[in-house]
Amino acid sequence: MVIDTPGPATDDFLRRYDKRGMQGRPKYVRLREALRSAVDAGHWLPGARLPSDSDLTRLTGFSLGTVQRALRELADGGVVVRSQGSGTYAAERGGAIDAPLHLRFRGSVDGEPTFLPLYPKVLSRTRAQGSGAWSAWLRPEAGTDIVRIDRQLSVNGEFIVFNRFYFDAHEFPDLATRPLASLDGANLKQLLGEAVSMPISDVEQHVSFVKFDAGACKAMGVKPGTSGLLLESAAAAGRSSPVYFLESFIPPNDRRLDVSALR
Image 1: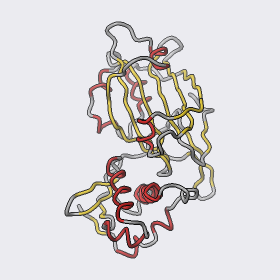
Image 2: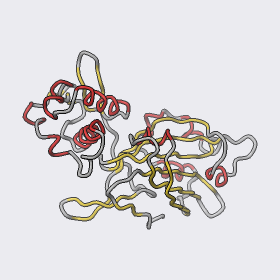
Image 3: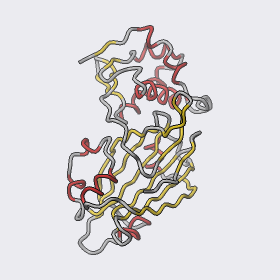
Image 4: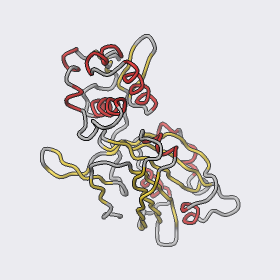
């Protein structure tokens, strides 16, 4: 069903959802994040038609090229759907992930402290290549098949965290084969814990400051060569049963990351 939003409701979206600290960023990034925040906040409900490209140019003062690049990147991330000859629509979104174990960013609602919601979007599922910290933890042997799931996690619509989630496909065939779309909004940690009929009881985490690779920068929508935090999480069900390894790339942001609750 297509929902048309009356014009006056769109006029103030940039004022309402433009983020502090974004004025120094490229214009398409500033507009992209304002539109993302507006969709996540329900300013445009799923199925609602956004203003046309030309209307967004008029409403925001940005050039048509800036508007189209912002919308194209939102479409690539599944936030909106672009239909040639019809318009741009707010996409159906998965709900916030339940009880995220590793990534908890502090914020407030109505003045009360809380943890900001995370909205995962699965990008790809591939066989892991080479070796790294993940292979040292999972200890792959001949015949094992380590799979990597790449995800974007929108943090309250404010910025994107990029995940690389590693696990053994032979141990968890369902996660290795189920439709990718079914994993949007899923808590992968909970899925693996249920598969082994044991809770994820031990998580070892390490934080380092790194220069992001090109793939991570693209997934987060930041400039090539950007540096930020890499949070590595090695999880086990019992101290001797490695279950998964998670790399979380966290771009510069104004939020406090809480890593105190690991169980």
